[in-house]
Image (cartoon, rainbow, N blue to C red):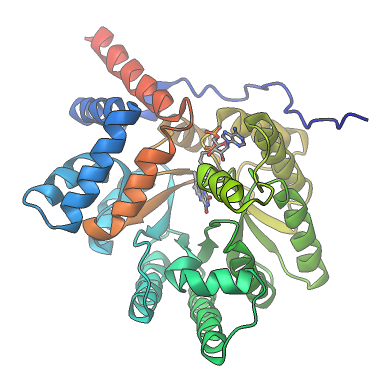
Length: 403
Ligand SMILES: Cc1cc2nc3c(=O)[nH]c(=O)nc-3n(C[C@H](O)[C@H](O)[C@H](O)COP(=O)(O)OP(=O)(O)OC[C@H]3O[C@@H](n4cnc5c(N)ncnc54)[C@H](O)[C@@H]3O)c2cc1C
């Protein structure tokens, strides 16, 4: 018997996301011209690859002008600032347009205990900052910033840990617990990113435990579900049932997933079945099914639609209407990355929906891996950067025709 493939329903078109005047009302002509240049560059895979490699090298070796050039290009587009003080300005601009922020300390890929403690301390500072700024309700972090990859890999693989590793893993849970405790006290929400499938079980273990401990009455901590994986819809339902039995709210960030090529390459190399759906249509259908599940259980799931996919947003809007869920329901949030999909973010905000930008910040050198990922993940995915470039060009032409 042939298996029935999941399909996505037709596009309901609740809002018009082609309105570039709304999307870019906050950007000057010069800023749009700079964005056009940048997206034009990023959109060319070869140039992008070479540029990213040279940029990362120049920053690493502190070559003259490297930091300044990065600051004036990719950094300006995708990052809120080097420090919390600098982030304040970007956050305030978003606030004026009814968009809130999810603060993300962007340091990635450092592997030592000092760096893990620094990440934790920085995250606590971000939570304190958030508690003092009404439009910064969320702080995000990655467990790989609080633990070594080797440890997460060993736990995920179910290996017997040495006494030292046991101690280190307990230290990871403790770091997360400290973050949850401060977030809980300060009325801030903590989002935990999803990462590669081979370290995700160790992440899920500590995050799911934290949810049971802290999500009484409100979702202090939220896990992330990558719907490009064929097993994540079931994981979402399973965790929801566990949370319900434990009398707590499930906090869920829904994403498609950022590591598709890496996942497929490793699975092929090591000879195990890829955890990724066979094609984009299946990932889309899984994503939309997860959104519908969360809407159906909105009183016990606090969730965020973290996507730049217009159809997934339109379907969620239609789903809210059908289920009579209010635009301002406290368990419903939309979120896009800073510097991307402004046509979705600002239109949703203008129409009164709850919407946030993922706002990374940190020293230029530390944020480089994030920037390279931003620039590179999209060249492999037809459309994403082309979409951004198309919108910027459309708005520049609209403004020209106005004068
Ligand atoms: C606020 C926010 C937070 C995020 N947090 C995380 C996180 O914690 N962890 C994480 O991994 N990612 C995260 N992402 C990135 C996200 O997973 C996606 O990579 C990115 O948003 C693009 O997907 P999209 O939903 O916007 O839609 P689209 O642009 O429509 O979809 C692109 C995505 O579809 C999937 N896809 C593409 N081609 C195929 C194919 N042939 N087969 C199967 N699937 C395919 C891939 O996941 C690809 O990234 C986040 C994104 C946002 C906006």
